[in-house]
Structures are given as structure tokens and as C-alpha cells.
Image (cartoon, rainbow, N blue to C red; front, top):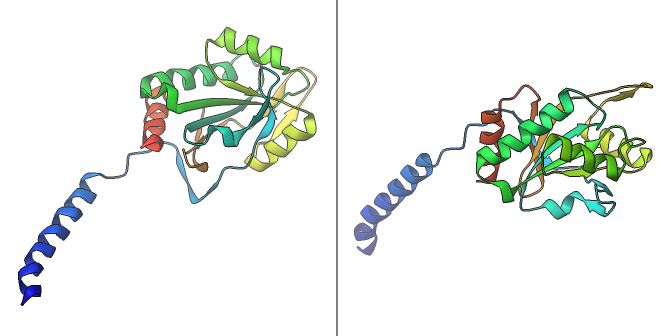
Length: 189
């Protein structure tokens, strides 16, 4: 008897929960969603201040991870500036970290990274270290690096790491500021 009185309430509650679940749909993401979900490879090196850096310290924040070099005249500073503008547009300045990982560690000293960020006008964390350290990081993220005497060719992707430390999205430097900001907001939810 008691079940007969509770059954309509249970059906009503289940309906409300189903409607609520549908109302909060997953955000539209513009980069490529990486499946299966996996932990982002560890990054340990030094930052632009010469202090030890570990990616794990950014846990709880969305991380936009970009590989580049400070002597780059076009794509690297443009992409970094777009990431800074996207972070501002997202409204999540304190919840999004921008990491710039050097593909030219011999020249990208902490001082060079600081000067580069000042020139581009972006608040970011610069990562550098020994060539062996950096090569391990490049390999873990599938980044191809080909250095010549005057230039460094490298893979040109932006990786997004979610607040739980999972590698979630990859996109190219061709993503718009609006799309980068939307992906930042989507991961921060």
C-alpha cells in the first residue's frame, strides 16, 4: 500500500531529475576532445623566475599549454597573445593558467622568457630546463621539434588540461579567441 502512494512521487522526482540533466547539456567545445580521458603527462622543469616548476601545482585550474620559442617572430607570440586575450574574454583569469613550454631551451633562459612575456604583454608561466628535460616533455606530448641554426620548427598545438589534471582538448593556432575562450569556460564548468 505504501508503495502505491510513493510510486507517483518517485516518477515525478525521476522526471524532474531527467529534465534537469537535459537542461545542463555539455558545453560546445571547439578544439578536438581527446578520448579516452587520461592524465596530462607530468612537467617538471624551471619557470621564468628560475624556480622549480611542476604541472601538478596547477591542479584545480584550466591549463592552456603551448610549445614555442622566444625568438619566434610570428606564430608563437601571436598564439600566446590570443591565449591571453581568450583568458580575459573567458572571464576566468584566476582560473586559467597559460603555460609556454620552450622548444629552444639553450636560448630560452628564464630571463629570455620574462622578456618575451613582457614584449607580448601576456601573463604566463614559462617552462625551460635542460635539453634532456625538455625532450622528455616534448615526447610525452607528441611535440616534434626540429632545430636549425637560426630557427626551430615545432608542432603547433594548444593543449587544454582540465582542473582535475586530465588532458582534454587539443586545438591549433588557427582557433579564434572566442573559441579558445569557450573551451576554457567549458573545461572550467
